[in-house]
Image (cartoon, rainbow over all chains, first blue to last red; front, side):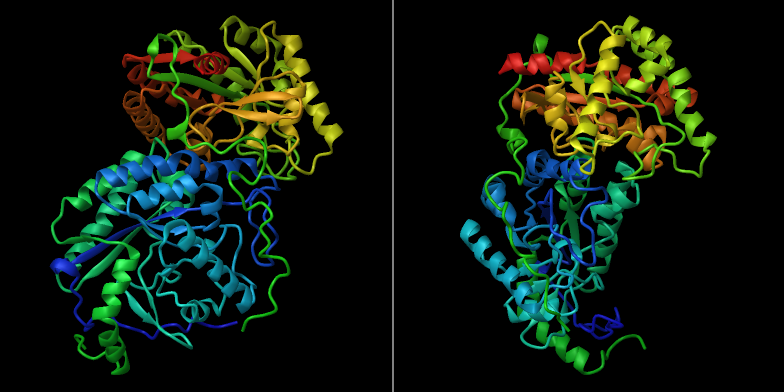
Length: 306
Length: 310
């Protein structure tokens, strides 16, 4: 086992190359709806049991199924009303199961990136060849259903194995979301090729908040606003990234959708906000700042208040 | 480094259009046929009450139903707190609903009717609908149950309630929303016609069973008092806030789409029937009922209106 991921060196939040987002924006805000299918009878994985109850886990399966039948549509309407696009963390088998969902995403100009094939097919213990096969499947499926290239990656259920980031880079993935170590994009150390991390979030993510931390619905809005307000303030010094991960089966419920509506109203009311997709953030950073960050890291992160 | 992998882990035999099982068809709510409720109401208000019996010696396997006995045997703490619901809480709920002209659907463990015939009489006198909800909370329907054993559970649950109530038993709820892949067949075989376990929609939809069609009804779990108050430790105010937010969303959607919606209020006597909560429940109901276009109905009435509206 490894004692650390090994994909990045320590980088203080001080003295970093100065980031400015397009149009002089100080914060890049992106929304990542996780559009998923959890299988009723998934295969076994040595390191994780897919369902808390014996198969068929009707309660938990159906709860997630709600997202594709109902929640997604409600959430997409609210996002469209605020002029905010999604960058879909997509279990690509959804393209085959529910192509109407993909049509709606494309109609709204959303990005599709891969969240693996199913959320019940973990990367734990996959060989590198198997990981490559999943990535190739994702690339082909997303291209076939949307005409888009596969640029971004979040391992299903964040079950990446030790080699996953290396394989992603070798397969031409441009940005990974498997690490939540920063509020700015960062170069990822991989054995071949080039990969960056784009900030995702487990803090303003509806799964930990609503399922694990029992967050009241008004509190959710307050947390999202507070996250935004701080990153917006810090963005005056150097551009920050805020990701709002979403799960239609939770936030798309009728008792919660107004909380998203209120949070988005707060965000879009500000100037200097770049409402971006993951791909756009990755491309801007890679074009304008990747080399500067690599050089700064190589020089021993000079320029802070030390 | 990377190992040999997991054999056959990337086979996807059910990767296809629609769901990965054959119980019902995938449906996107915006594409569902519009529904017109009686009086052109916007929102049907379905009050569904879990009337449950939790045996003190309930088994821990295959899992403990939410609300089930949690502490070491003999847990008077767990047993009597739940039993309170059938002695006191449900009478308080009946009064609060009666005062507003509302009738609920009791999702009734048959053990409650068998143990407490006086309560069964009161439920019948309140003109509530009775839906079968298995035998008790320790007798779960699950994939490891033999077919004959599961059929016996359904037969006992439905038979007991048919003996105790003159009204027709039409609905089914499996304890803890747990089913085997046979449960729906057995429920249809027992002559029931609507089911409530798959919490995947806001509206009814057709379900296929070996011995006939069923209608799935949107009982709530995420918005139930059992989940919010008991499992998630929210306070009563948060439960009320979430129900009212759901109501506002559904009420607005009904106007926008021209299709009726359903607000299901899923409540539990040992939780919402507590003295410190009952007035909040009443006030919440008043907030909902002050709106025009709210149709209070039982599960069976909603099923009938949904079918007639097609």
